[in-house]
Structures are given as structure tokens and as C-alpha cells.
Length: 220
Image (cartoon, rainbow, N blue to C red; front, side, top):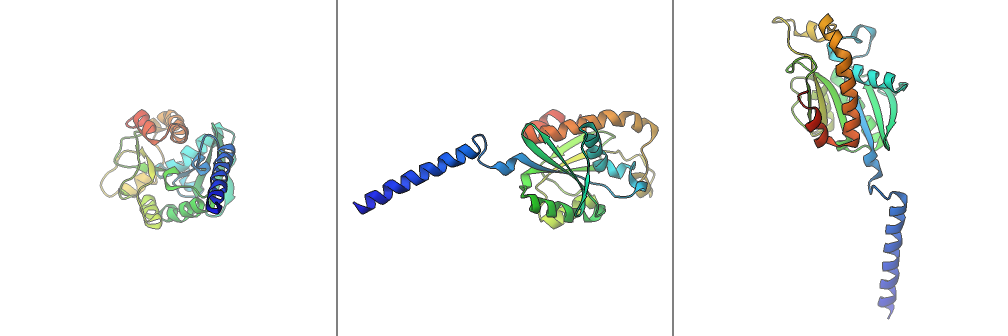
């Protein structure tokens, strides 16, 4: 009899707990899945603002301007918060310089309790023609110091990265000058449209999911 009574109360308690969870979040059993860390890679300083290597910063700045968001100086970077369709996007521009980007990513992942699958890193890519988009769920650093440090600090390469093509139109031995150089006039003309597409990609990642976003935007 005693065991039967205990079982009865246990069953009721379990049912009550399930009802409570459903009441708190009827559409999502993991409330943290609606929070995303969008990291734009770049270097701080006025001399780097319009350089090819700072496309990550430029994409986030474009989204912030479009949505009237303000960046706040925080630990290890500048941060803006964007809310869209029930999702919260934390837009992070690390101030650690490119080769220490992982420190900022790790800190804000941990502080905001954001899962690895909700990390989205925007970076330049010499192996893609200008403006070409490639979104991948994992991959090597491709020689990029920012990605290299993130891989090292997080101890994994299984996070989503959005590679923005900057092409490789430089002479032998001039790679550094090219990457840290300003966009040419033709690129400047085409850049606004590419930045607009980039902001749509960020929103798609958080609302439509990674697979749908890759299908829609990769190679475009």
C-alpha cells in the first residue's frame, strides 16, 4: 500500500513538472536555443576600418546601422543586441586583435550560456572571389589567424563560419598589404549589396536554421 501511494505521488509530481515546463516555454524545451552569438572578425583601430580583413566588423556595423542598434564597449570587445522573430542575436566585435579572437568568443559563449551550434563567425577568405558567400558548419582555419585561435581556444572547429570572399588579386609577396588594404573602387560599388545579403544571412541562421541558410545562400 505504501509503495502504491508513493508511486501515485511520484506520477503526479512528474506530470506537474511537465506542465510547468510546458507553461514556461510551450514552443521550445531549450530556451537558450533562441540566443545566438554572431562574431564579426576584424582588427580595432581607425586604420583598419575599411580594410578587407575587417569584413566581419563591417557586416555587423551594417546590420547595426540598418536596425538602429548601438554597440557598447564590454569586456574583450564591443557588443550590440538585436531581437528578431523571438530570437536574440548578440553581435560581437572582439577587441583582442585578430589572432586572439578565441578569447572573446569563449568568454561571451560562457557568460551568455550560448551553445556551440548557435555560434556564427564572419570572416574574410582569400580563396573565394570578391563577395562570394560560403557558409559551413565546421572546417579548417584555412590559414586565417582568427579562426586558428578560435579553434585553439574552443578546442574544436565545429562551429558555423560565414566566409566572405575577398579574392586573391595580389602579386607574390604582397598578401599582407592586400588583406590589410582598402577595397578598390569596383569592390566599393558592389559592397553595399553584399553587406545587405550578409545581414539577411545572419537573420536566416537564427530563424530558418543552418541547413536552409546554406542551401539558400552558399555560392551567391
